[in-house]
Image 1 (tube, rainbow, N blue to C red):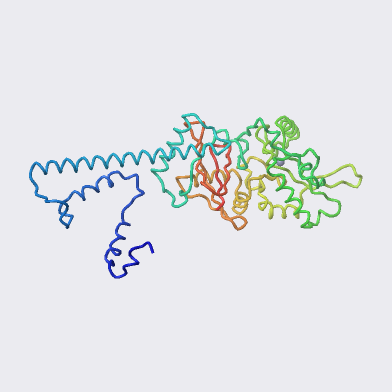
Image 2 (cartoon, protein in one colour):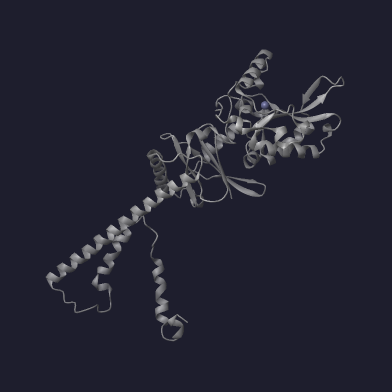
Length: 407
Ligand SMILES: [Zn+2]
């Protein structure tokens, strides 16, 4: 009713047909001042307008001069507009980076250094993108203190990379027994503690293992978590004992044990001998097979396989498992690599902005995994993360961050 064209169906077919040509212009490309600036020259060409414009257009030399000045002024005005637009776009980009900072609790805000760092990287990404296709779209920068490199489910702790105890360590660990409130048969002592984030996953795995009815679990055997979180001094004690016994090949020097993180545990089958006093620990083939086939579903990996001893520098430990998260555990297990190799794979082949992310399927979902190196110029790193959706960021305890995006 409001549209005049509908009231006059026969009069204006030509007008409607002529309009779509306008779609060929590019209103969003702020980054191209030269293109935009060049356009007005076309309008200035008198030969291009077929209709006789305005008043009488007799060109006298002095009037031509005035016209030239007007056109020149027009070009200058448009060029200034374009420059202002570009500056506005850059300012907006910087501001969006700042907004991201404030939404994350782990972020250091408010120093000029951080903004400079984020801006540098943002500019860098803007000029290099899209290097690896559509996965750059919809991503934003968030600042992480470089101390976060030492935290997270994917930290590598071994002979080379020491664990950094946070001041809040005691808050991060929970008694497996007390947290889950049952399954006392599953812990060697009620003080067996683990990182709070994995307690539930481990309890779920133990319950599933028990209900799987593995043969040896009947008949007096008890599946038990024999060791979880260890303090520095306790590990020191264990290591010294191991040296005295000649078994240090199974033990890490204090500070370099995964048990410090609360993300690793030793699982064994406890058997009380006939006298009721002596006990032996073992992990027999049936339990071993079940754990190896199922642990990745709960985010755990066998950390020290026999064939990786030259890399891990720890002798085969059939009982020692480590939490890394479900998609990572799946990839590591299916590809028969160890954590050291996985960390290197991400660093060398799946760095953001340089190569494709690693695609991992787990529980019928696709995950994208990529590495962001920690800044060497600043104490803060701008980590590229999705603007929305589910993702996690973990340090690798080596030199950067691992981002895991759930698609
Ligand atoms: Zn262990």
